[in-house]
Image (cartoon, rainbow, N blue to C red; front, side):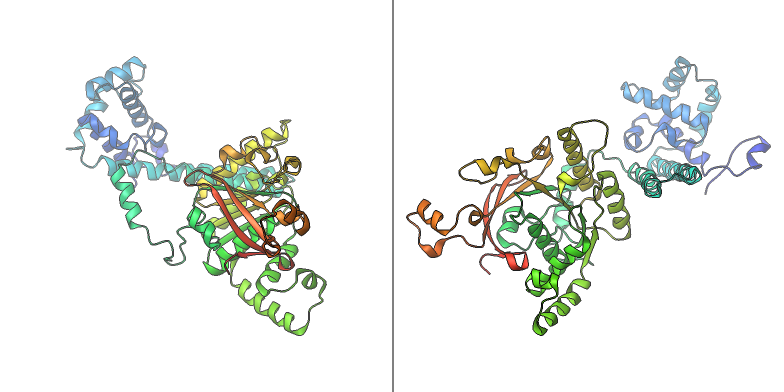
Length: 462
């Protein structure tokens, strides 16, 4: 029960923010009885969490002693308060004696501190509401900016509630053992989204949560098609909830690609409406399958990461997202602070990695490669080819490159370069996916089949 203490009648003349002085005093009494109890609450409770000015001063004195690794008891806290000229404002020695008298033991210190922290969060919520109301009263010209700021205020409030602390390895091992099998679903909860490209999933173990995955290739190699194929497989086959930020293509173009791939019809005929009756039926059937998939588009051009995060958070709060896809990196809006583009890209990749960790989802980002690829004899991409690389390689957990040999060498040229090969071995429709970086596993290469007429990637063995 929330209590309100104070002798002044003015305390009852207006509604005070939620607080519980009894819980605050019980927390401090527990610390004065048993100074070691502060180890249990120091990472989750701050001086700002106390409403009563006296209890706040006493707890801050305890924190000061704790940081200097000094003993916490009635005498040392009184000395610390006196040293800071805070003893009288904190109620003097008599108040410290009162704190000790109200609790017989420190056994329930964590319970008391949780009450203090919960009510502190409620007060911060009231404060956040005031800040959001102020944004509304400002009546600025940019509604989206005001909404983004409002969402950011609430997100910081929620995010600030949980602070990471040391956990024993046994707890982590218990969590690991309790995880379901990779293919198991638990009421729609996905352990880790899969690409359903068999060899790729074997190498990566699926798309791991909180990972930043960079997918890069030269123009027209099929990087967007590959990203959309992963989105389709994860959403349709596995039931994942996928958010796609498309900064280059419109939502209509994306739908055309999804329909062509799902219905197995020529994307050009679909776009121009040149389909026969059989193809139209296949498209309608595909529409039924895709309509049930949890795929969401945002095709706002020149979107900034802060706006992406805000929109992703909004969708994530409705129901958790399993995968975010961004197409593509170099089109993301910069911060306009006069920095060069390399610095901007570096800041963008760090922010995208932050989004992956905050939402605990894999973020797959499509990226351009520099022209350096074209001037090498092999044309196989390397990490140094990432355009405006900056910290792309550093921030990414996984870097994938797509390479199609048929785009650089026709059959005759290829046979000249490979005299030991047969004509039917020409890699037509073969896409090499190079795992150039894998922070938590091996690197290597897998082959997939690319079907240009439907802009679709499939397993080679299929």
